[in-house]
Image 1 (cartoon, rainbow over the protein chains, first blue to last red):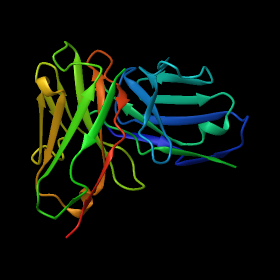
Image 2 (tube, rainbow over the protein chains, first blue to last red):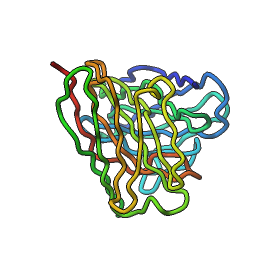
Image 3 (cartoon, chains in turn green, blue):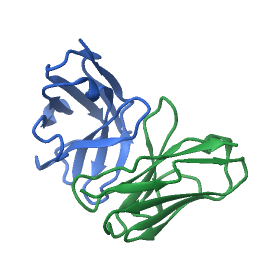
Image 4 (cartoon, each protein chain N blue to C red):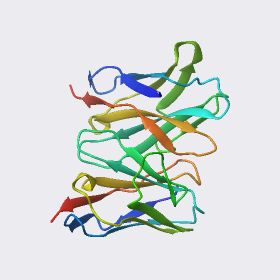
Length: 107
Length: 120
């Protein structure tokens, strides 16, 4: 099964700053990578699909890039509501594994 | 408007079988390309993909749990059922169901989740 490794585990930033989150796959997943945001007590929410496509209703400050094994989620200017845990997920091979998550916390 | 809701026991004993039901609205599991998946999350830990069933009854399972999982659908009731045998305290988690489209592969609508605790 494909292992997704996210880094860093925790990212401490201030509102208005730029956030860069990484997801690395143990083998190529082409562009079949998604990003989810999860806030405490809530279900995950789809942000990005197929590496770089924003899901419906997702603000333009969220962007995704990458292909093959290395992917990045960028939040251009952090809003207070963006502090949460972010997961990547691949759909290239079964099972559709998730990364272990990056916690984005307020500095 | 697509909604999903998980239901089932909140507490099960070790070795028992867990049966969870996902009841959904706003889509049909008889529509080509549609699927429903199950994902779980132990307290304070990461998401774990468990199983998925498609409109054509194609089923996929996590290899590490395949021997314990069964996923079925009842199209007429708009429900998907997940059973997990031989429950253990390490299976304590919030269990989510989610909608997917085969072509997209992403989980675009999620239920609120249901916490299942395994304890004697």
